[in-house]
Amino acid sequence: MDWAEFARQQGFEGVIADPYKICYELGIDVVYRDTDNDGYLICSNGCKIIIISNRISNKHRRRFIVSHELGHFLLHGESMYCCKNLYDTNSDRLNSINQEQQANAFASELLLPKIKLKEYLPDGLIKFSNISRLADAFNVSMTMCARKAIQLSKMGSEILLVYNGDRLSWYSTSNPELSDINIFKSKYQRLSNLYCHIGSVIKWKSGMTSQDMDVEEFIPYDNQKLILIPNVKNIL
Ligand SMILES: [Zn+2]
Image 1 (cartoon, protein in one colour):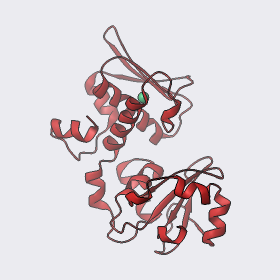
Image 2 (cartoon, helix red, strand yellow):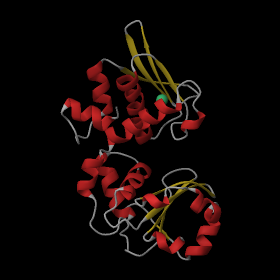
Image 3 (spheres, protein in one colour):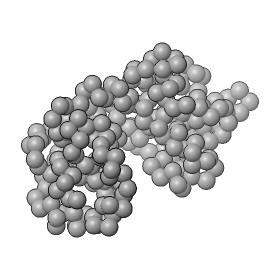
């Protein structure tokens, strides 16, 4: 059962939920500690605690981790879950990969319900200016909002490539035929290769307006780079 299913059963499908409020209602304390892993859920002797690492300072990541741990609580039962680097489920040691994926899907749907997001997507091309407004409205990160918005695009032509430093880590498109990352890994593993191919790129910053056919680059934090291309055919 994922969040969408859970929400349907509880009668609040499509409602944007506040994970901290849900924790409060369920009697789960949320605390911050110096820990190596991103988050923990500890249920023992009647105590229910979510621990978030002090290393995580970004408020959107904290909300995501709280939602992820909440996912374990509601989907997998009261136990102990130790969640390491939630963007890389393969690195998890204690929990099954399946449970990590379920908790991630739960968190994503809790914070940004597809049914709600669809209502607000433009009829035309999705640009960073649209994504920025939606990310603010839903109180989620640009990265998460961009990934999901592109998957649900009404135009169906955009592709979002996400680089960590100079290396391609994942991409998002609404075209199911392009679900194999190797299609792009062979050609555009390095960001420099992509730049050579596409030519000029607009370095988008918060508050900028977007032009339809521009390729846009946005740096949400650290080494992460989001590249939004209006038409995937241009790089096939
Ligand atoms: Zn987890």
